[in-house]
Figure 1: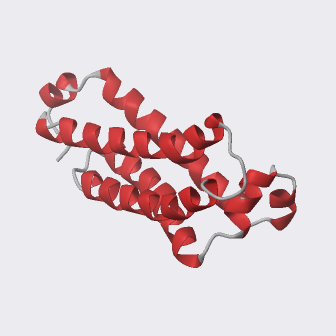
Figure 2 (figure 1 turned 135 degrees about the horizontal axis):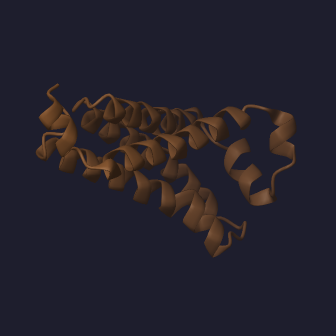
Length: 144
């Protein structure tokens, strides 16, 4: 890496990469906390319905989504273009787990708009934004 290349990388690259990493670490912690039955029993009915009825394939998608997103952000911080492919895998994992979440959300249990936004829309929006950003910085040659 040359000093010239280091100077061309905008400070926002580091802010966005770290913010994405923190978001995905939060998702990883959420995933791990959901393995604790005592913790799950303290959650609202809507959250418990998703967690307790989640099939293995949706749990795998959840893991792929959050751990893949965290890995993708780490790869961005290390300036590796393979982050793009990891973000694609993460997005796939999010879509897989969303199939189950949407099924539960469309059942008898009433979800608030905030719950739908935070549990369904926001993860997809963030994952798409990180994938888009990885492509942008790859095009700018900030990652290789």
